[in-house]
Length: 202
Image (cartoon, rainbow, N blue to C red):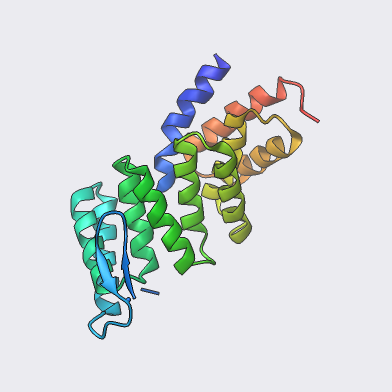
């Protein structure tokens, strides 16, 4: 029962966890291209198209989101938020290689932002690379120590890996005190209860 509950909970939590300064030639796996230092690049247009894309993304309209984001990146390939949001689209479409590419590009453009690191962790976790996922979540949590999304993911990936140590239990205890997401709170409480019933690892 416990293992089945954790496995089911992981599936239910993984994709929703994703929701939470903008040219030598540069091309991504999907083929859009912009020229660095092209005088036609338009930072404001990129920002407007990215804002339009966010509105589509919030509605789950991934086709229009992708169209708007490609327009943003055609205007300015250095728009980090657009790369991060395009990665979200590809993640939902299960184009995981392309999602990882976009998140990594966003990380380079926004090295002090937690979200691209957290999102890259979701890609690693989706393909079963739990060590890499845990590392990405830990780096994200270092950038934003109070980000419950990154901390929740940082708890989940090691648990999926089989960790039962005191650090994992302590992380869950802290999350229970400040996480306001009902589905996550239920998972955290249930998982902590199960871990307490098991002997801790050294």
